[in-house]
Image (cartoon, rainbow, N blue to C red):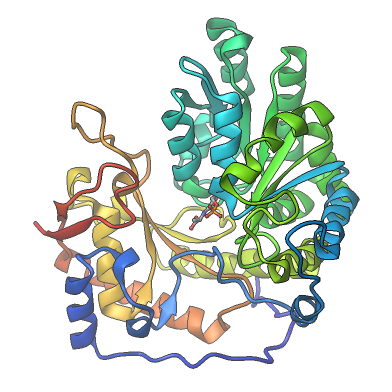
Length: 454
Ligand code: F0G
C-alpha cells in the first residue's frame, strides 16, 4: 500500500510534551514498570488503547450541545434508541456505562455454574465475568488464527468444527451462549468473515443456543469485511452491519471504541430476552433511559454510529495500522501480520527471544519502548492472564506489545517517529531484561500490578 490519506482535517489540538529520557526512567520506576501506572504528563504518544481516546467529529460535538437532560424519558435516549433500531434492526436497546458492564449483566443472566461460553477468542473482562458467574470459557479460534505471521484475511474466524464437537460433547443445554468478538482484540485486532458468522449462527440456531456479538471493535471488522471478503464487496457498510445483526441474538458494545468516548449497551430484537436482561440495568447501571451514560455521551454515540457506516471514516484506523505494520515488517521487526484493527502488535516472543515467558517479555518490551521513546503501549501476553488456583502461571498463546492507534488522533509523522524508535529498540534488543512481580493483584493483575527487573 501507499501512504494513507486522512479524510478529515484537524481543528482542535492538544499540546504534547516529550520529556527527557532521565525523567522517563524515573517515571517507569514510579509506575512499577507497568505502563498502566504511568501519568499522561510523562507520555509523548499514548498508544495504550483505542478505548475512550478516539477523535470526535464536529457533528458529534454539535449534537452533544443539544442533548436533552432528564433522568427518565429524555429525547436524547429516544434518538439513540432509534439510531440503534435503524442500524442494527433491533427493537430493544439497554444502555450501560461501558462494555464490561454489558458483560457483567449478560453473564449474570445467562451463565450458570457448570455452563460453558465458547468464543472465537476471549477478552480479559469478558472472561472474568463468565468465570465469576461459575462458567468456563472455551476458545474456538481456528488454529491459523494464532499464527503470528500470516496472509490470511480473517484470522478471527471461529472453528465451526470445534464448535460442533463442543456442543456434541457438552450438550447444548450446557452452553450459556456463544460469543463472537468482532475485531478479535487479543490476537491482534483480527477480523472474522461475515461467512464465518453466518456458519456460527446456523449452528447456534440449529441447537437452540444464543449467539452474542461483541461489537466493540465493529468498525474495524466492518472495514475488513468490506475490503477483504470478495462476496461482500458490493454490499454497503450498512448492509454488512445489518446482516451481522440479523445473524446474532444479542449485540453488545463498548461505545468507548465504537461511536463515542464512553458508554455502551445491549441490543436485541427479542422481547423475551430484553425482559430478562432489563431487570439488572437499574441495579447496576442506572435507569433504563441512561444506564450510567450522560446525555451528551448518548448524543455522541448516535452520531458516531451513523459515521461508522461511512467507509472513509472507518478506513482511517486500519490504513494507518497497515502503514505501520508494513514498514516494520519490511525491515524485519517481528509484527503480527496481516495488519488488523486497533493497533500495531509487536511479537515480543521473537523480539525479546532471550526472555522466558515466566519473565513477561511483552511487559518488558512495553517498559523498554516507553523508555526509549515516550510511547506508551500495552502488554497483551502472560501478564494479562490470571494464575491457576494452584498459583501456576497460564502462559499466554501470544506475547504482544500492542501499540494502539486511536482513530484519527495521530499524524503520520508521529507514526514515523514510533517506527524509528521501534527499529532502534530492535537493533539494541539485547539491552532489555525480564520482569518479576513485586505486587501482584489476584484479578486482572495487569491493570495495577508492580514489577521490577529480574
Ligand atoms: N470487548 C472488547 C472486544 C474490548 O476490546 C473491550 C475493551 C471490552 C469488551 C470492554 O469494554 O472497556 O468499555 O468496558 N477493550 C479495551 C482495550 C479496554 O484497551 O482493549 P469497556
